[in-house]
Image 1 (cartoon, rainbow, N blue to C red):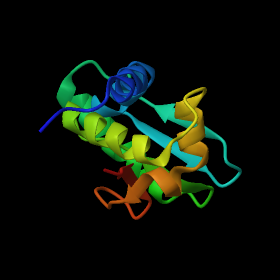
Image 2: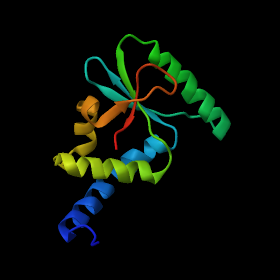
Image 3: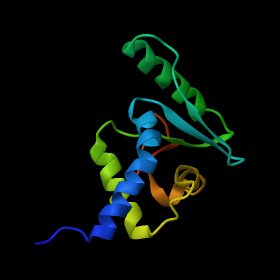
Image 4: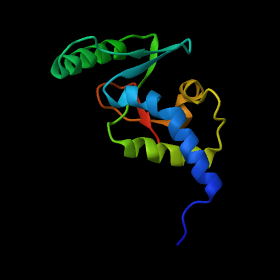
Length: 127
């Protein structure tokens, strides 16, 4: 059995380079909030310790779940396998690479699956 074609390896490398830092922000516990007017923001904790950061994000997550202006909360697991599987999924979809993170957020229902962890508005990467 042979591996992917070189052109596909190049696409994988390009997508990984394009998405890694964006995904990493989510994998360390931050979340993306998408509002009903289609604006969005990355929510981070400014707390010092890991435990305090987790508690702070969970509290904010709950607040955003109860905010009627919020339509989705995007999060990710920590494993790079999530990113790799997501890239494989994106390759099948033949997406534009330019401004990819923004494109994904604008079309979040196509590329993220509803996956309740802390709220009814939670979405995570499709694979």
